[in-house]
Length: 242
Image 1 (cartoon, helix red, strand yellow):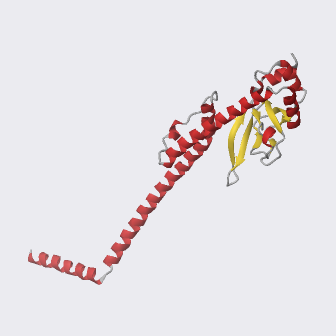
Image 2 (cartoon, rainbow, N blue to C red):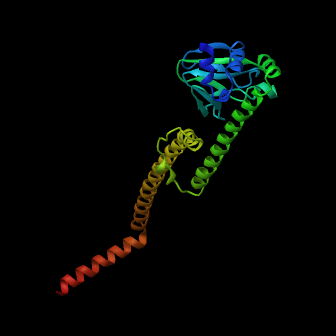
Image 3 (cartoon, one colour):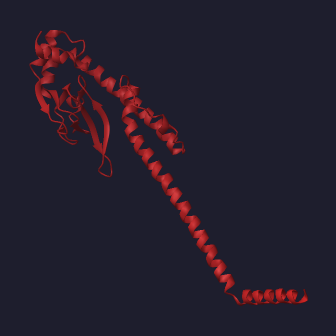
């Protein structure tokens, strides 16, 4: 069997395609090697191709308001990225970074539509792939809402329940992706608890200093001096009477 066909059979979005279609597809793809930490494309780049991960692992990332990296997903062998660009021609919505040394198969938009002209049934395979991605997104959002709601209510118990999950389902994969974010939330809570303890200690120190100041102010008054003098006279009188 043609080596290129074997490689394409590993791609989830091409499952079920007959060998003749895979052969035609193999003639239209190109290979691209990526070193670990290198970028396949940036957010905002023109979207003119889809990629199939043949070897290695990549992550889909965006920047938050502070310029930090937010990992939206991770993709390994057989998974497709950038397939929406074949249809909407919109700029890339995220940046793709190689997690390990990787190799991807690239299929340009023009080549893809040439294939569709020859085999319209390939479109059904792509629709299935997009539907799978949408199901994952729905699961991800649902899980994020559930966990965020608990934290918003002050319930951090979910933090103790987060464990590394097997990525063999949409829920497991979504949980693994969200765990990194909520571990950060756990760190924020720890700092919050530490700050509360420091504030309590500071409050006690301030109260103690205030009490000392009040005592000093009281004992320095003329009234207190007279009171102390009268008490001394009373003790002396009692001593003389005894």
